[in-house]
Length: 151
Image (cartoon, rainbow, N blue to C red):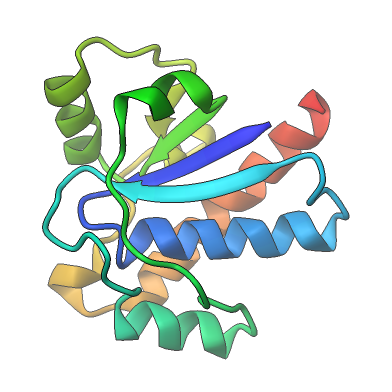
């Protein structure tokens, strides 16, 4: 199974989700069954490492952000990945604008999986990486339960 997390620049929220979910997958012993990645809807940060706030928040939780650099979502990703989870509605709109119509069973906001569908707090604007981490943890926890039923 292939899972992609997407945000605007791929330096704050989506790499945090990638790292958090990868950590969960490793703890569940499912690393050989699930491939996880993240990407951006824009070109602004391509090649840059994760934001210092993301790196710090992940380190506080004992999760590595090593090797995570911003990459751009490609049309081929839409086909190749089983699920693509965006961090907010703007990310969804950017994907639709660039690639056309999307399958909402495959491409959705991460928190659409939860009982409280909403956008994930964007620390780029708020500086609050705690809220972002909590939102991502909530979404990834529900995602893990969903994936365990599917594999």
